[in-house]
Length: 110
Image 1: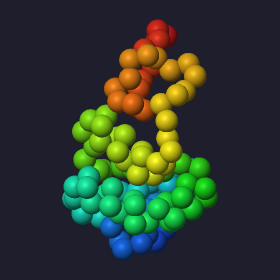
Image 2: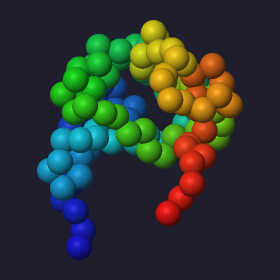
Image 3: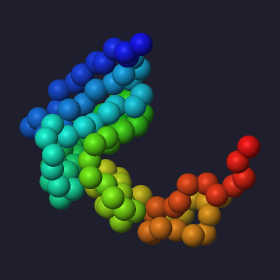
Image 4: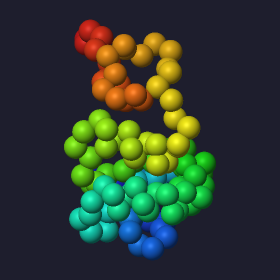
């Protein structure tokens, strides 16, 4: 079965925003054309109010299709969205990939 997709307008048309199956969580942001991370970071800065409004409305953003290849790039995007983000989380492993990025859980699997 193919899920219904609902779209929403974005500033400048740099990204396409949508939800799946009429579920407002998360709002999925995808590039409208291939681009560089620097362009995404600039877009996030210019449209910070729009981004914060969408986080408040949808509870989460899922950035899909952007060329994020490493932890420092992921951290730069997270800081562009939430500049005050810190790495002080209770219960996280000590082996950070960057100042605020941790690997996935290393606990036993079932």
